[in-house]
Length: 98
Length: 390
Image (spheres, rainbow over the protein chains, first blue to last red):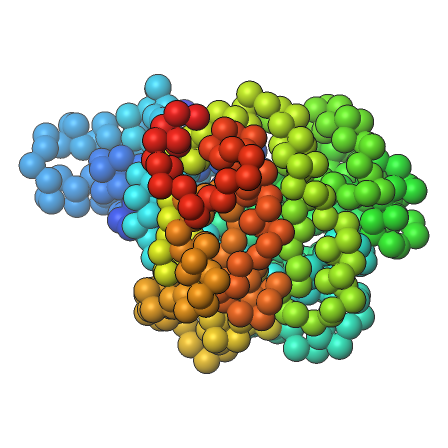
């Protein structure tokens, strides 16, 4: 799957994303997302920083640019992280292209 | 537990996740008694008003229940247990179920399965509760089941409900209530339970039945007392899976037993939220003493959990001399089910020893080797040594 950096992504209605004590917890709503009843998803620190920008309005280019301005990391690394996370969440039906 | 191939996303088992291990959210889970009414009329039950009881008029309206669910989610709760009575009797069950799931809450449903319809089973298949449904079973045959439920046709409806869950591959577990009409069916129940896909261990049984926390029917309480197992019969049942029972009980005793002194709430009461059908927040599902509950129609879960219940836990102390001479000094506290809620149900006070529970605890302790015949637990001084040795 190739992602367009101009695309905008939003959280799928098949999941509910919650923030509990600073952790992003993604709770499946529809069947087929979590394969076990007591398993939910959470994001690591990098994932959280990216997730917080995926608001259904910013394009991936915008997200990459904003993170590059906020973090002292090479822009290639940030781009790799953003595209990697979004690709994974799209495959898991957690994110959808707007 | 991180996905091996993902640097960003982890699939987590909630019980092991650090947020919930440390119990940092104000609220971990919510219990909602959707109704005290039931479509069964079980001989042992402590909460089974008639299906059309007038209490229905006092039950929380949908918007009030939704407000409580929203606040629970905002306080960090991840699971809501829908219980009763029979929660599926509530006409707005589906609305509340969907509301809870859309808040990102997992739903744990306690039911007798009689009201599981094809439509409801389809809903659970499409939008799973994310917790195994728990179905209580009262017998393996129509005669035994209905001698307990006292509703003709209830066995067939239960089997139909369970069949729908199986057909739709909806995870559920079963548990039993051991009573005189079904006491010969333990083996067949366990054999059947072992065939159910979501059963990971033998089914649990209830047998040391509680009296009615509302203290609303002396005749029903007499009936409950009449179907309770004797302590020795109960220990024999607990011993059916001897190795795991002994291992778990020994570990439990090492961690949780010891004389409680005069502090009455030394259990987990008040750490989670249990809301009755009318919006009163109780420290646990059983505790219905009017001074121990908090009116959620006039206040908030947060105030109850951070102010009202902590004060209760600290301030409510035993004054009954019998309790102080026995329970307060008893090292079996924890193993024994004596608690303010059960004292209230049995005696109408918070600190009266419940003789039946005392006899059960002594029988268990003798079986474990913690007590010798004729010994009384509150007279034992070398209890730490005894617990180490079991």
